[in-house]
Length: 210
Image (cartoon, rainbow, N blue to C red; front, side):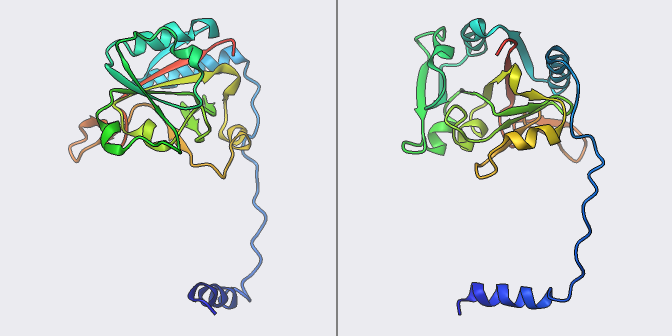
């Protein structure tokens, strides 16, 4: 018997006479009735309150909005599965690095890159939370956590109001990153410090008709 098997056996023995767990009462809200326009408005309100910069544009203007948010970046990284059309307007002078699980960018190299552009899986408007699930257009967690600026594209169809609506849309086998505004914390004197655990700057491009 391995050490793991022995530990699990002891746990099962210790719990053998434990009472059955009561059924969870799910009386909380699980669905909402907001329109797409209302969902966008609520998400924008929360993101702006978190000090994120937000653009709400038609899908046809995504490239221009992303290019504007990358105007000050001399380099940026993207996941291998990102829509190339979104990057069509980025100035040619900005160095692009393509990251993938097969050819990952080192943390040291990511630390020298100004920005990252990713898609997103689902957003919760009530809390202003954008969730990435590591799919091809969102990439590895590292690329969205190390560069100083994160430009995140959100399709309006992926916005829900409540967390219980968001969870069924996620692949729980994938590593997830939950973003509620730029990375920030407060020190012992309650002074806000940004960029401690992730990007200091969050720019969100919401595709209103996508």
